[in-house]
Structure formats: C-alpha cells, structure tokens
Image 1 (cartoon, rainbow, N blue to C red):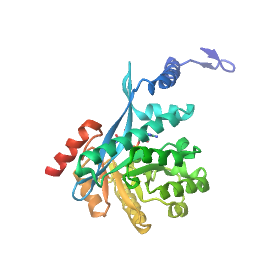
Image 2 (image 1 turned 120 degrees about the vertical axis):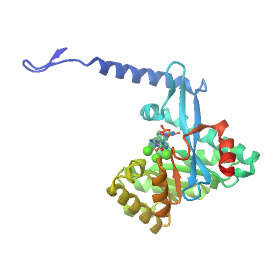
Image 3 (image 1 turned 90 degrees about the horizontal axis):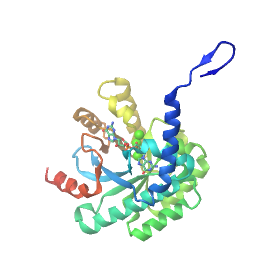
Image 4 (image 1 turned 180 degrees about the horizontal axis):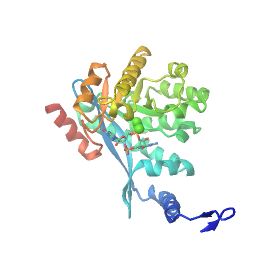
Length: 281
Ligand code: C2E
Ligand code: CA
Ligand code: CA
Ligand code: CA
C-alpha cells in the first residue's frame, strides 16, 4: 500500500500486477509463437441467409499456447498491434488462408465460387507495402483475387480517410473484395462510406443478437440493410444465433449470415465435410 495525499490510503490491487505480468508474458511468448508454428486458423461459414447455402468462410486466428492452451485473438491481437508483431502474424494469416482456400478449390469443385474472408488490423492497413503483400500472396498461392475478401473496420478507415481510401482503391484494383466489419459500432462518416470502394457491410453482432427482442435493434439492422442496398453493397449479418433472427434478416433482404445457428468456427480439416453435409441437407 502507498499513501496518496493526507490520510488517503490506496491499496495496491494484486490482480493488477497479475494482469501486467500476464501481458508481459504473452508479449514475450508471441515472439516465439510464429517460429514454433503455434498459430492456426479456424473457419466459420458465411451462408446465404435464405437458403443456408455456404458461400464462403471467415478465417479466424487462434494461438495454441504451450501452457495456456488455445488463446483467443481478442487477447493477443491487441497486444501484437502494440508491439508491431501483428505485421508478421497478419502476413502469416493471409498466406495460410489463401493457400488453404486455393487447395480446397483445386481439390473440390464445390469450392469454386467460395470466398475466404481475412481480417486486417489497423496497423496492417497503414503499413507501406500492404498492397504489394496481398498481390504477392495471391501470386504465390494462385488464388483468384475475387476469392479473397479483406475485412476492415470503420474506425480503421476514419483515422486517415484519404490514405485509407487510396489503399482500398489499390486493393480493389487487384480484384479482391472489401468489407466493412462490425458496422455500426465505430465512428464512421456516411459520405466516406459512399466513397470507399467496398462491396460488403457486415452488421455487428451486438445489433443482430438483440434484434428479435429489442425493436430498437431491429430498426438499426433494418436501416443498415437499407443503407447498404442503396449504396449497392451486400450485407452480412454476424452473430446469427436463432432461427427467428435468420427469418427476420431474410425478410429484410439481407444477403448473408454468419453465426452459431449455422456453425461455430471449425478447424480447416473439418471444412470440406461441413460443405458436403450442407449440400446434402
Ligand atoms: P470479428 O472479426 O468480429 O469476428 C467474429 C467473432 O465473432 C469471432 O470471434 C467468432 O467466433 C464470433 N462469433 C461468430 N458467430 C457468433 C455467434 O453466433 N455468437 C457469438 N456470440 N459470437 C460469434 P473470435 O474468433 O474470437 O474473434 C474475435 C475477433 O478477433 C474478431 O472479431 C477479429 O476482430 C479478431 N481477429 C480474429 N482473427 C483475426 C486475424 O486473423 N487478424 C486480425 N487482425 N484480427 C483477428
Ligand atoms: Ca471479421
Ligand atoms: Ca465482425
Ligand atoms: Ca465483432
């Protein structure tokens, strides 16, 4: 305990130290994680909301930590953003997702029109050479560019909208698809939304999750779908957990959905069977 002002005693909270130590350990362990091949991707289906057909997958990174087991990206992605390690992790994610999708396409005709979505972090998007990196990965994996969708958030774009717009335009020229993730949770400007060369809006799961119970959230989803369509964009609703939500979204003419109702994220080796099972259903 230490003294703060006269008679004002602040008790040191040991859990604070624990948290700080934990962060430090994760940071150190992250340096070795790539070399030791501790990252892997899981894939969550994105489906046509009306017929439930799988149209693609979002690649989500996991860390198989030697002691902690599987660590969530919400824990290590922000840390790796701070240290800059995200550059290496992000490059690995992009390469692995494209390689895997290219392999599935070569092996199974069912994958011909499928799209793999990859999340970009703020630092990755502003990194010089980002566009070249994507071009190189596409060349090396021979994945057709229209089979890759990059997800960025509004907040990432609004920091420096002119630069972001230029980068997105160059990515668009490569032929990849672009998506705004978590739409509705960040700060964004509608005039920029119209100017950015994007194809898809992803409605955040905080709205989708409550749309069947709270009329306010239903109205937000309704408005986002209408806005997207008026700008010529497709809509993916994330966090679809209930059949009721699926029906409401389908009635709103939302194109696609993603969520536990359809499937949890699964390891890559389970993906082909998931696709075959969905086709038989
Ligand atoms: P996100 O991009 O919004 O990804 C969707 C998250 O929602 C995933 O969590 C997914 O498992 C979860 N989810 C999917 N369906 C449902 C559902 O029906 N209900 C609920 N409650 N949750 C659902 P995950 O995999 O833990 O990823 C969390 C976040 O970590 C992602 O949010 C994304 O921002 C970040 N992330 C994941 N992988 C990467 C990556 O490779 N690179 C970067 N930069 N960020 C990543
Ligand atoms: Ca995402
Ligand atoms: Ca999202
Ligand atoms: Ca989210």
